[in-house]
Length: 327
Image 1 (cartoon, one colour):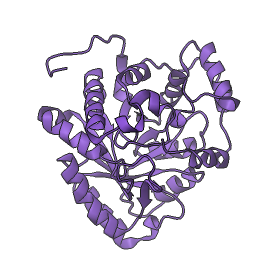
Image 2 (cartoon, one colour; image 1 turned 135 degrees about the vertical axis):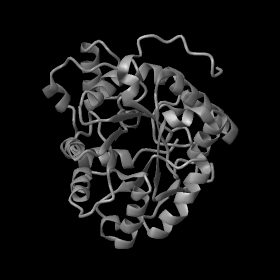
Image 3 (spheres, rainbow, N blue to C red; image 1 turned 120 degrees about the vertical axis):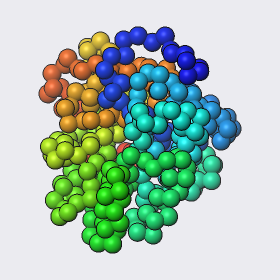
């Protein structure tokens, strides 16, 4: 597809302005989402060149579908490089995009499906000072949004004065500084950051989906504070998809989606977008078909109480996520 061509898609509507494209699943050969072999082929098919081509094709489709928020991270394999090379090929598009990335994890999987460890976490000033220029070099531009990757209660960030001062410097330069969250204490972390004196933060990216709804009230408070609120893992790493649906609450969600006359993925995305506090809902699509399907989502017409009943206890949800295989 060239810059003068447009896809023959209709009915996208305004949802594209609320959706972002996340590159966690397309920037490295292995990840924890369901259905990867069907989407990407076997491990031998996921060479750097093949994944770069896939990423470029997906970014191109997202552009023409109206998506303008792209999300990457230092730990997403070569996602920043893939995004950067796509931007270099289309320099006129940069001003229309909002680009987010993250620091605090690094990719150590060496492009191996069977790597014993795929990423390593370190929330230190030294890591920030190393990874910020790496991000800028890989992207070929400064990101608009730069997040501490996976801020949890055991992270030293909120008590590290030197690190917070460095983040304040970044914020003063015009970068929107924030953090992403994970784990059963997401809400507590968000509230602690909101209460931080002279906070450098004005953005948060958190997991919210039909199976893990615990961060919702805290994200609403962040929205009230005029923070940018980004929702990630809306399909629960594929559990809320045709590929990942098994029994339990996933099956209950699928039944609700059928009653709502839309695919399970549509129900999951529509439920997230329906929250006025969610500025951006990140899609983890790895194919154009998935991305287009995401844009067909609609706000659920089923009772809110039935959607709320799908939520698992946070500890159970995150234990299941931690047990997922990289594949």
